[in-house]
Length: 226
Image (cartoon, rainbow, N blue to C red):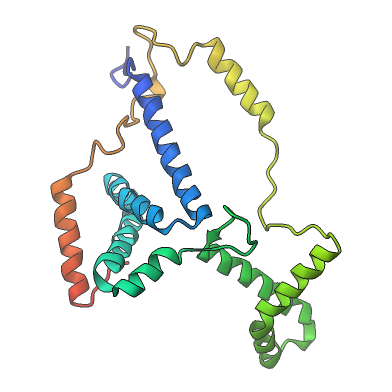
């Protein structure tokens, strides 16, 4: 057996870690869809430690989580903190569970404006663009109302995905045939040798504490890392 090969009797622990990470991500997406500001902030708190454990690969994400916590618990007034917490998503359809992140809504707006400006052709002027931008909200509501009256399908803007059912069935069949989810003594998973079972195993809490204090000092003197 090569030195890099590791006997993974704890493959169930690895699978459990994957499931836990997957559920965390799904919970975060669900919090956004439901517009649950408190749950989003709790997820950001957890994400901060998760990204810190990933070290340099997720530094900018850890910083973003930290700055959001600074805003909610330190910099903003109680009123603005509450607004920031609960103004993280928008529901344009009026259907429960259909909220989308604000930045995604901005992207949709940008795409609408770009298409409108493209349709101007040679008539593109600063005045025309300004008129389109100011009337965007009203025009989009009118278009959506007309689409509803005419029963015209309204596309969400999501990319269409090809079916993965055949691939999924093939993978599932292979896993069953190989008894991949059963404990088999001395079975070697060489491809998993560099995978960390516990995502927080490399988290240095002391270093994280010093890192937070360093950014607190930087913020107090007007320095923000990006």
